[in-house]
Amino acid sequence: MKSCVTIALVPQVQTGPWIYWNDLEASMAKAAELGFDAVELFTASADALTTDRLTALIDQFGLNIAAVGTGAGKVVRGLTLTDPDPVIRTRAIAFITDMIGFGASVGAPAIIGSMQGNAAPGLEKEQALTWLAEGLTILGKQADEQGVPLIYEPLNRYETNLINDLTTGASFLSGLRTENVVLLADLFHMNIEETSMADSIRSTGARIGHIHFADSNRRPVGLGHTDVDAVAGALKEIGYSGYVSAEAFPFPTPDQAARQTIQSFQHYFN
Image 1 (cartoon, rainbow, N blue to C red):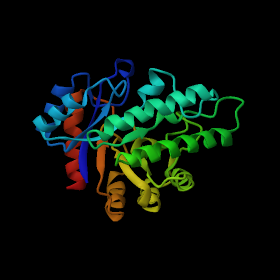
Image 2 (image 1 turned 60 degrees about the vertical axis):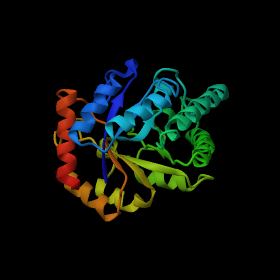
Image 3 (image 1 turned 180 degrees about the vertical axis):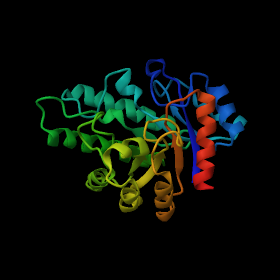
Image 4 (image 1 turned 30 degrees about the vertical axis):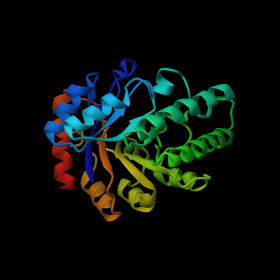
């Protein structure tokens, strides 16, 4: 398994669960110094950062890009894959398509979390899920053409009324007309929704392609009450070898949160 820390470059999400903020070069330097293998980026758009600059920073600090988030499409532009307006759904697909291309240029997959949206009031949930399946199928195939998977993240019930747990997510993905969409297992969301986090990981292991590493209170692992021993054991049992990425609040400071994260990663996975 490989360690990863998040970097957000979007001013509109200043209260969100990312460890480092704003200064990409300084954040990557700190991540490299602490021994992280990679960083996960949250940018405002696909053209907010040039591939040339990012590649230079990758080479300078010896870090990989584990994934790129697409949530700014919803937060900044109000786009989701399940909006009742077909024009907005089309724009959402276009935004994510561009993010897939941006990530693929440095070998990183894109994550679809908040851009999945919700079943709007008065709309049947099945209709929203149909639109979500259509969007993920299109985008999964596009990602496949560029040599990267597409990552889909079940969110807790307070963030979406569509898919909230890994088992439901795995079943949903199995019905898509593409095999290129994988699950993101976010420990914070799982703490709310799963009966047993470890059992859910074991039962959906073949589908899991990315981990968000945060404790029960969304602080860095070790500062909440999640049974991380059980989670780590399950990840080892399924042979997970991807990134374990800290999408957590920068508590009490970004530097302390990053240090807490890498220490926890080394404790549980090294």
